[in-house]
Length: 154
Image (cartoon, rainbow, N blue to C red; front, side, top):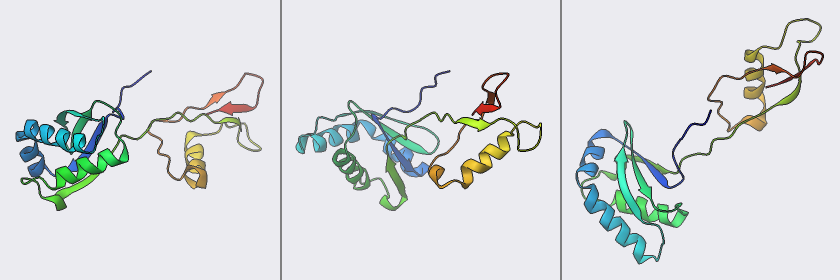
């Protein structure tokens, strides 16, 4: 199953509700001014439009944003007259989504005939330093490799 998430051409701005409403009211003016600021640094990125959800404003661009472009947009938004800069929490790009496949784990718990439980695997993942910055967003599935094998795929 494929799910469409945010694109790398979108900048997420976490902002409070009052500032969000003020920003959206004059969004067409802000788009024009942002594009002028980006053009001044000879960037090929252009802001296309602005939309919002419950907790953020999302600026959609024509290309993937480079760090310098992100700084210019951040500086512009924080210097806008109607926005309180201290209430703008963060500027970020969407994070990547990856799939994790763990193979060759014993299917049965040691010295028992009980299959390994998802809770045990989640505990192992949380306690291992390799997975410090990884967030598991869906329930893990444990699949036995074959009827005659004692190994599992997670």
